[in-house]
Image (cartoon, rainbow, N blue to C red):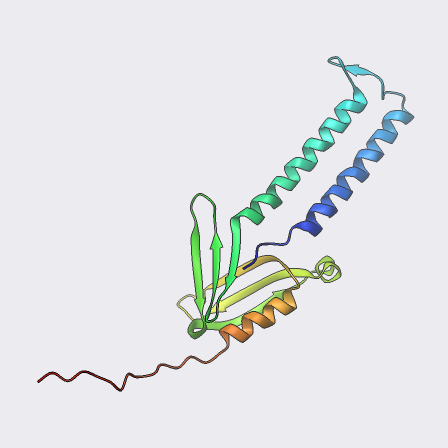
Length: 163
């Protein structure tokens, strides 16, 4: 069972917001407006508040992504659950498995994360994407081991006879 791995994205966004906030604060000090007052509050406090709000709004999307997606690899299938209030569950059985694709961007290679796309043989070439997977090559191999197994049906030899 797993969920999207958002930690690298959270750290990157935090770093970016802090870097830009430091730059803006430096400009406020350089132009000597840092202690100016707008509606009873100093400019530097407005800057801190503004960038904190920007950071929080950017993180909320990632937290919703982590809350919304759940991946469960069973002995014979892959289950992908999406949603909180209205949940959709997709089950990919080994009999319908067609293809698996691992997508890793350059930052994804550095941070060992990526997306996995699973395709099935059902009508319309159905596909499901697992987003922000930690160690996608390892997870992809585990999915292949489960879904690429051949399935056999055994006929029951002990049929009941009616007289």
